[in-house]
Image: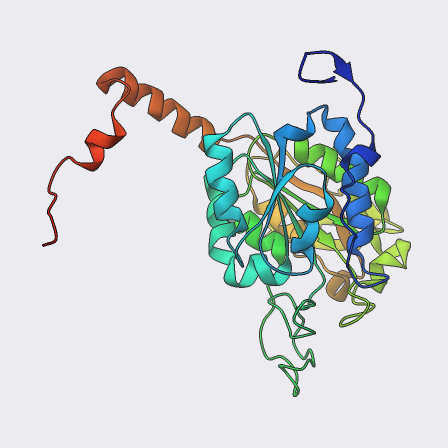
Length: 334
């Protein structure tokens, strides 16, 4: 239960998380649905607004903190994960969220993202993937498909695109999930699981940019039969098809009637199964896996740093910052 400054219980609603700022995304942008879903979910946290922080980099999605009635920071291009790491480590009492697009997080910010994930910093990271640079008017991004014709690739992109979930799992992320912008119910389910996870939670949200990359995910946003929902403890299947793990460890699609289907276990310690599921795409198997791929426990970076500080203080005392700055080899510039 959320309480006010005097300890009295108060009940927050989605409206309490809407700021007084005018929302300035293009009409029809998928970001609206994601913003509404997040604002609607926030009361479930039971955390006072003053204890919640949204950190973003640069891009369309990076305007998110303006629209949340919480603390927030619209920071530097690609640096949101790094700034959030410092905040979460120094203020473990806060719920820290990172918001960014595929260009911000997987291009200039790729290095910061993978290190936040492998360190397992206590962050909830939402990557809004529209497979394009929308804010700068339509250049190809690190997730754009090969052959993508944009203003910066007039003959078609020759890059092999990132699979965001493969990147996250490869970086040893302890929580990895995927949702769709317009699927509010399932998006809320994923947000619920991500927020409950202690450590770095990475969520890819497939988001439509109706101006520069309209319809990029219609095959799963509009055609629900192409959605493969991952449910813990249930067979991985959709329609008359299912998934088995092959002899080489890869996920393979078979006729569901053959049996022996994979039973989804996001808590499996080995990441290979989650990685195999992340490799399934509409282009290769005709369906897109959604939900929680991986949810495992590992020491949290923030806790380890705090423990180390306590150990240092026990051995050497509280310390003196001024004395530290003037210790060792110093010199004066004449």
